[in-house]
Each structure stands twice: as C-alpha cells, then as structure tokens.
Image (cartoon, rainbow, N blue to C red; front, side):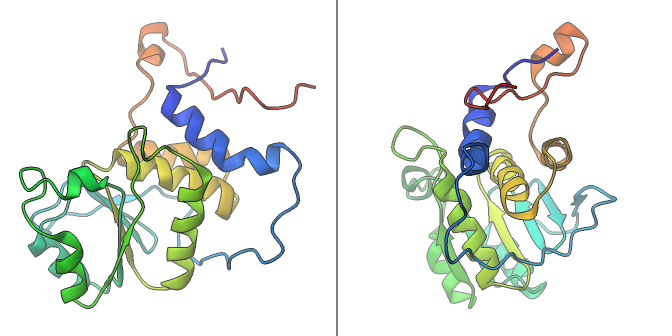
Length: 206
C-alpha cells in the first residue's frame, strides 16, 4: 500500500529531491561531497556516557542529538567535534526557560564553529536550502560534527534528506537510519498492520 507519510517528511524529502525528480542539471560548482565515514552495513550507534544530552547518536563522523548542555558540548569537543549545527529556531534558543544558556557563545568559547540552520514554524520552513547549508558545513569540517535540535527529531529528518540528496542513499536505507535515531514510524502503519511508503506528489507518472 502506498500512502503519503506525515506532511513534514514528504515536504522535506520532496524539496531535497526536487531537482533530481524534475530532471534539472546540477549546479556548475557543486559542493564537495563529504566523506562521512559511515558503515552502511550498520545503523547509527547510540552513544552513552556523555551527561547533559539525550538522545545522542553517532553515524560515521556525525553526531545527531537533542539539546546539549554546556557540559555535553565540552565533552563532545574533547572527542574532536569542530562544529555545532543547531536546528532550533531563534525563539527557542533565546528562551532561557527552554535553553538556559547562550549556546552560540559557549560553542565559540570552546573553539568550535556555531552554525544556525533554524527549522520549524512558518518563519523557518523545511526547504532544500537547509540541506545545502548542512552539506556545506560537513564539507567545511572534515572531522566530527554535532547536529542537534530539541530531541533529535528535526535533526533526523535533515539527516535523512542529506543522505538521499548528497550521499546517494536509497530512500528506504536513509529512512532506516533516521528511524534508528528519532523519526517515529507513521502511526497508520501500526493501525493498518502494514508498511507505508512515501509518494511524491510531483513525481512523474509512468
């Protein structure tokens, strides 16, 4: 049975793959494809032992996580992380009840680069530009990189889109990696007792 998954997944992945589906030519100067050091035979590994961040997974050299504390940032920096990609919106990061410290300042103080790619709400929609910016961050930083949101959900979706568009992963393989981190299966799968697949509304019909 083929259905459209929740609107967020369909929107993000369709936007990420739109150029390929439309048969557009790639840009003249495409970004360097980053070496992610991913073991394609396995799934992202859950990382324990770092206090102040949940969940925390590692897929190759990329850490995908929920909101880290200053202590967690310091521990990740000690493990070689050179850049932190924050997907939370300015309204979230500036709310000291949600994030009780200045994350950007803490990251810079540790000697890492802070990269904001806000996703969520009408002001920060899910677009292919987010994949572009994340791809550039990985190309610019050949070592470990942390990408996070609140609980790893938005980060998992961006990770899936990046793997499909920039690393050539099959949709099913990329989704499996996202679901191993924080993407939850469509509840209709449980209710109907069968797996659902993504159907792109702008995909050419045979």
